[in-house]
Length: 201
Ligand code: HEC
Image (cartoon, rainbow, N blue to C red; front, side):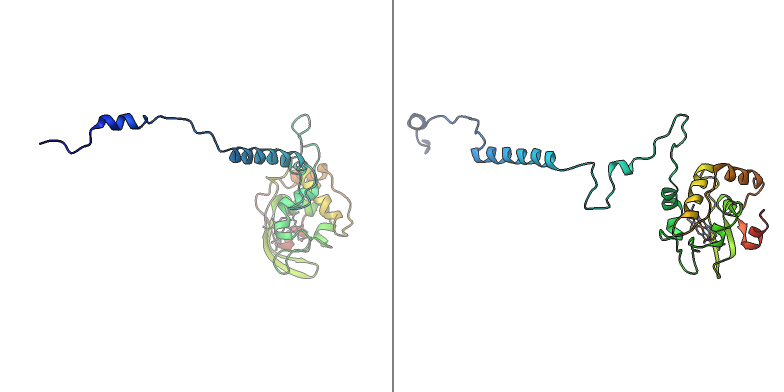
């Protein structure tokens, strides 16, 4: 039986062989990509960085950097306000007003403006049980900071809360905190109620 396919010879003669070729990017795409790259470089170059950010939370790189330790590994500058924000404000509130019935206020508190020994003891060992602040009763638990904060840091935060929001009590020295830490080193648990606090001298 004879093949029905056309004779390949004339076909090969009529059509050229297929071949491979590189196809260049269209010119408009190259222009577009070039324009994007130039715009990106321009944007990065003209965008201010490291300055006060107008939008957002206003923090700069400098304000986020931790304080540099001075020679000997001691933090050179203790910032009582920063320590307060990081350790106390969650409960006692940034305003220092506390939460009525739950967290006692710092503003005008007799425990803060009074004896620095009592204040240092509360911070070093913590406290729980009944406590009267400015005529209101509280019965919560105040965590101890003796383990987490150094004498100098405790002195810094104490000095800060004694002088902020209109409070006007003298600053506390790290030596005074250390003396109170040494005097109460036997104590291993938080003070229970204000009766125990009043016995501190
Ligand atoms: C987990 C919440 C919490 C945190 C954090 C906290 N406190 Fe307190 N604080 C309390 C509570 C609750 C009381 C009341 C305790 C009671 O009723 O016996 C209190 C009481 C006090 C008192 C005595 C009452 C007064 O208001 O004068 C002082 C002083 C005090 N805290 C200082 C601080 C300082 C300084 C820090 C940060 C270093 C801090 N507290 C962090 C919950 C907290």
